[in-house]
Length: 228
Image (cartoon, rainbow, N blue to C red; front, side, top):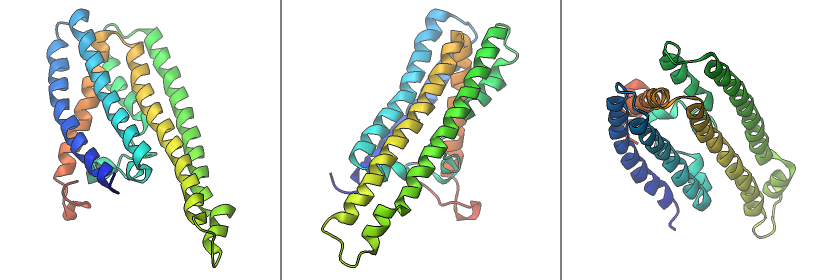
């Protein structure tokens, strides 16, 4: 594949993916008042599948071109302000659970406790990702890479091989961070009833869609550049 072609493909995928989000939100919002499990459960599954599609496509890009995956140019300037380990911070999803479920008539003590336990585990997992990413990034200035860069006549491919090893490690950390993001959403949904899960997912996707739309209007005067 031509260098950079994967990134351009991801831009096209992302635009189409965001385009499907409005229908998913409308379906969830329209079904919530009736609170029918048989209607809401497949809509919740569809929303989770929508989230999963993004990470599956991003993983395929990373397998072909990890540098493109680590620099998500398909996101607009406002979306990029939310980046943590090349994506959004997993613990952010608990804000949507807190905002929509605290007053829900069926929001039980057991659910609240389960969400708090999950929040704590997610924050600890975030800290572990932070430590691993920092260690891999520091390895770019490690002895092996520096020695290859400093050598006046490095052996053929030595620098490329040293940097590629770091790239492979970054690919592993990208996969770990994205897996944590997707797993956190699924784990929150797993704690909730279908109507609660529908409200949670609708709020989360509505927020993302709002950020995406607002970010597309950012220009140089707003601290960003217009477009993707």
